[in-house]
Length: 103
Image (cartoon, rainbow, N blue to C red; front, side):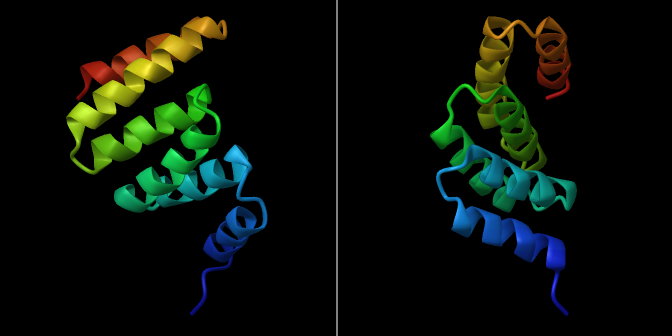
């Protein structure tokens, strides 16, 4: 049985390897499925391509938290908060603080 959605996102990464959004989309699917290590791998690709991508950093923090890597999650979420504030998103920064507090 094939998984069309997963294959679609993998193809998007293959077709657009320099697009942070393609890696982010794949990572979010893995995160949704609780495949935390796979999610972290994909999301790291998004962050490598765009280190200021706050949403990808938040999702990466969630992936590391789900994988039981609280220290990595805290580090990444701290970066996400800095970028969220720099980009004028105080609400996101508050949401990130809540995630960090839950670790």
